[in-house]
Length: 137
Picture 1 (spheres, rainbow, N blue to C red):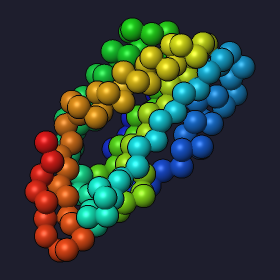
Picture 2 (cartoon, one colour; picture 1 turned 90 degrees about the vertical axis):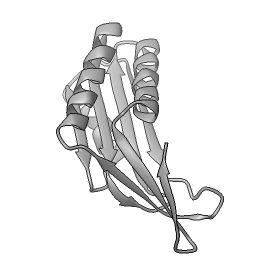
Picture 3 (spheres, rainbow, N blue to C red; picture 1 turned 135 degrees about the vertical axis):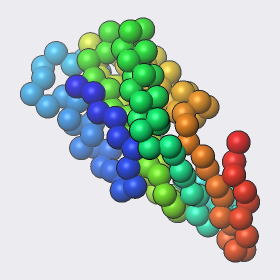
Picture 4 (cartoon, one colour; picture 1 turned 180 degrees about the horizontal axis):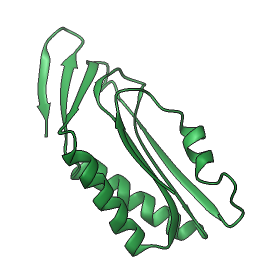
């Protein structure tokens, strides 16, 4: 199973993780990571995320395939939100299923590291005082 989705709507991490094991008895591990929007010490009101539709999905597909070529994983879920996200809300989810925990952990960490550093998303901070903190590198 592989699910890659860039969406404005929130998601249910438990339902996504459950989908990786639905009807399967050969899964030995499911590793999940859910990233939340931080308030940056109380100054952030909203984080605005943008992406280039089509290109971003293809890049996530590519990195999921790379993870599958490196580790014997059974399933991958990559979800990333865009739009305006408030502190405390979910932004991203990576879930990986595999026969063994080590492969699941390695693949999940690889995927999340890519999403954090190289995925084609742009972030703009909107501060509590009404100003814009600009686009984040």
